[in-house]
Length: 387
Image 1 (cartoon, rainbow, N blue to C red):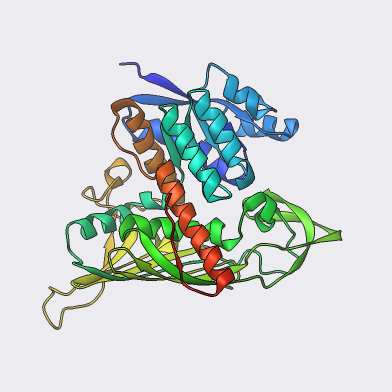
Image 2 (spheres, rainbow, N blue to C red; image 1 turned 45 degrees about the vertical axis):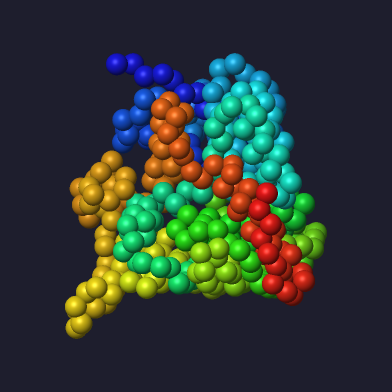
């Protein structure tokens, strides 16, 4: 049977554009979906660069004006992979045009922006997804299952950290991720948003928190991203860094759990250390993105002398999403987290099933990010104000 084409229009084309495009292209190979993703058009301001991206990623056409892309009748889903400053305007325009939306994280620059995005999506009856793809690692999904089954009992703690080192060189340039007017915040929004989403997904909502933030390198040469997390610098000019290089905070959850969080891009030797440990009354879980197929599980019910963390390689057919790929032990990678998320989203567009994280999750995440910034400024505990 022929399947309905789901026509994708992407705004932006660099690191995340490549990751998303790859996922769209391989979905039909691994998933039996009721729709077929079609890479219809991609938009970017630099005509030559976006032309090359369209050819490389497999898009049928390109635009140099994102508004023109949204206006097109041959687009069903708008995928926003731009710097954060553009998310709200683009997403609101897209949903008002009747398009479903995928938006990279963090959802917005401010809570007010995020709320307007959520309300616009609801008012126009479309689905809107925020791309917290790490929820969709099979090991994380399995951790969620174990928690929901009560295997850990009452949750006492979550320790979550996201450690990177890619801007440690003082000569690394002042790219958009280091400019508040474009990105909103530094390590907090860039990688702290990911561990907050995982904590909300696995443990629950944050009630209040205390935080500190630090900027270690306060002036850098100007420059631009050149692919992935690489950049080109202009050493003849410099600019001020006005976002955080690192953030740390303590949190109380509404269910009584205690959280300890750290996000930094100054942790030498950590290329992409997204990690958590969750402790409950009956056991504990550990996960590390750099070893993403494995979940470490400790259960108090094990007999004495045999207790200890066991390693579960989450590639068995019984593990979430794992049956879509290879035989047990044939591991998957970073790109598959996007595929799992998008497959769930696209199926939800057809059958009405829920798909999270949506713009409501994006708003709640933004509310916690806002509380972190308030707490760091006040040097006091701040309550998370959900809207």
